[in-house]
Amino acid sequence: MSVLQILIEPLQSSFMQRSLVEAIIVGIICAVVGSFLMVQRLALLGDAISHSVLPGLAIAFMVGANIFVGAFIAGLISTVCINIIRTRSNIKEDAAMGIVFSAFFALGITLITIIQKDNKIDLTHFLFGNILSVTASDVRDTAIVAAIVLLVVALLYKELLFYTFDKLGAQAAGLPVHLLDLGLMMLIGLTIVASLKTVGVILILSLLIAPAATAYLLVNRLHHVMMLGVGFGVISSISGMYLSFYYNLPSGPAIVLVASGLFVLALLFSPSQGILTHPGSNSFQSPIWKEIKRLTRSGS
Image (cartoon, rainbow, N blue to C red; front, side, top):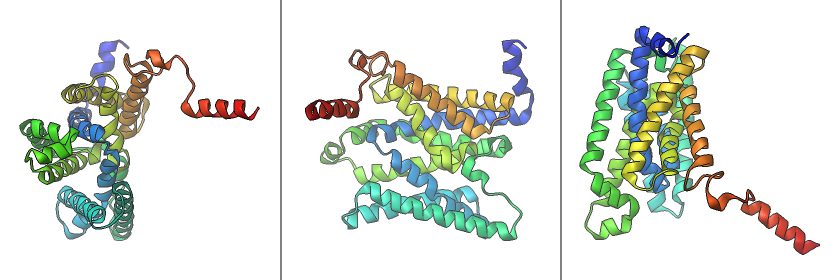
């Protein structure tokens, strides 16, 4: 089979066409939003929001509402809870995130289990993704969400850039940092809701962080991280879908594995930070190993 045949054969199926378009859109917006999470060191926040959408999905299904709207609302409520714990107590932000997302996740699993007792419907695909089942309306909805996310980022890029690198400076300059904070949380929530069917709640953090982290190892400026991250996100999405098609692998995990593999390659071979290529990494001794050797020498 020629390379051209390998590329064309999956496209002959309409469900693969829809799935590829969905995966590409999700790869783009995850890389853009993930760049802000990466630079601000807020990866755990993405994990917290992604796990917190499950109760919203379940409750929306129970009342007959749009499950994606329910997921988005639950994500926003979780960020409010995190902020309340962080600002009204001595609990640090990372601990607040851990408390909230574990509680919301447990509640979501419980509600889904209750629903499945009376309804023969599988909501667990939101945990792991089921991109091959997306419909044309799903692709349309994802495209709308992506357009909103990208438009907001484009319009507020300068403000978000200032806020991302110097929150105190942005506040001193008169920028509404609390509104920007809320806006970023909403962008994260929208991105996660759009990505649910692609990689699911469990794996969404990797697609949010891995492409941006890979780009972060190669370039310095935020807009370069975004652009290169988008490239890695799209490559991961397309490659994962083809691997899924030809090797009968679950699509979401396949996409995440490709994204993780690209990160490992960048970590090893980055011209400026690579373990194998950076001049400062000629010695493969970690700080822990150096301390062990020093203690051993002092003991002898």
